[in-house]
Length: 169
View 1 (cartoon, helix red, strand yellow):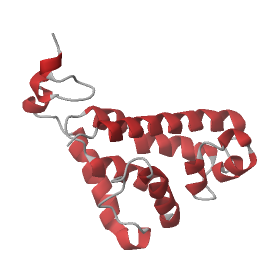
View 2 (cartoon, rainbow, N blue to C red):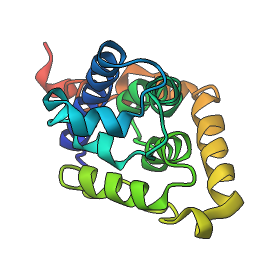
View 3 (cartoon, helix red, strand yellow):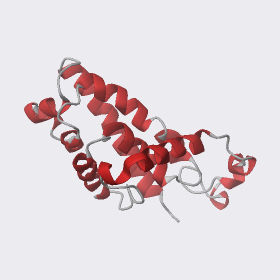
């Protein structure tokens, strides 16, 4: 499967998250709700995903949660096999726990660029229960496990960002 464009879109989204985090930390106090800043300041008009967060999530909470939600993304986006569930489950667990409407809105936002984002995850916190917590923990554990020698072999990495062997000289 050729998913390099999806990987690119997710990498761009990660950059948007980091940019939003930087702007939020400069724009308000740590106790200011993110949704309030996103609504009040023109600076955040390009970060529609901020309006999907829980109304009580503060800038300080967001800062902590973004780090936990996206720390896997650089490694996952560069792995030969893309673990789609791990990418979405950590974000769902860290940023949208107890906020199913926000999660659904966030997934809708990302699916405009990456059609499969959030597939296989419970859409509502009430429906997911402990299953979501376990799946997020399993995703983190599976990613943190040492990769096999076959995955680390140079010949196993093909396609973006690694060129096909026939195109390198």
